[in-house]
Length: 450
Ligand code: GCO
Image 1 (spheres, rainbow, N blue to C red):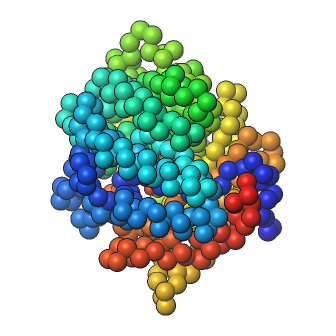
Image 2: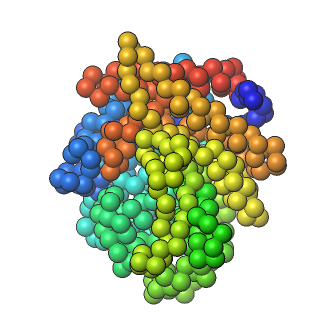
Image 3: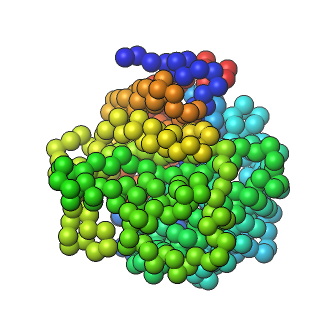
């Protein structure tokens, strides 16, 4: 089936997604303070091949050329994040004017080029100064976060209409405060549970701050999600899948809808109650204008008696003989359809935007070209499933490719390339891949005329 962007209708928002730490570089430029990722990447053994994002794609100095390229590709919506420590080097208190000016220049240039900025307020780069006070495990973060957000909205609220409070709380809390594989490298339930609860409260407090200052703003937040299926029809596997689904797909969305944490399915998290104070339940609820979902794959779950707390494990795609990306994630396009249906079934979600979907493959540069047919097929097949959901009546109103440029992929460093545009990290040369040309063609006039 050949589909075009026009099949989605005029109002559908097409774009690309990025994150500050993954592209900006200039990690100490113009008064920027250190974030937990600057710190984490400086410790040997934390990141594959010792990579870091001190320079990354040097977007800080090259944003004009990159936005020109976006315009050339017909991309109308650009999701990016603010680096908290460019604005407040110590996380709170002293403002760094040069950092603020950078984002003003960036937004001005986007608007001049007819590109709408969609801004994530928190894409994981917590100020290191705040981590020294406990980071997400310290309840005071609710107020630090709210103050940071209020400042940003007062500064940029006239230029930015679409705000996302957080990027994937489950991932930064799970990988950063339970598994210790992402910054700040903390482990265990004693860190995880308070971080879950404070992130949930901060997300709501942040949304409230945006609403109070910019009543016209469109406010959302973004959640990671994977379609979960049991390994077999045995009850043990089915129950294991229910638990993993609650953990990966429901833990953060449900409290924002007023449904509380899914503790019935996640008894292991019962101790979270220790961190819950009177009145918190209602303060977790948020009236979001849209929910961003970020989907890449499907997970198959098996009962595993030896795994503490959850007694379940993911069966690696590589052991299942299915097609995978370079991240080892199964390529399973119907998964995005299933997740759109699942989120749409919550009665209080007004609108869904796919704020990330994409894939890393083994891209190679040959004669100044990158022929990435696997990525073209991945995008085509997933976009077709988004259209299928839309035709079923799902309230999905936008789709953003992860990502524009090859960039720093967290613990995996620069090895997985997710971009529509290839980056030579030695010279900072950009080369639009076949997938980028395909997206340009797919957007066609719809891209700029929307
Ligand atoms: C995330 C982030 C992105 C990643 C992307 C690919 O979802 O982890 O939003 O920063 O780079 O998802 O893993």
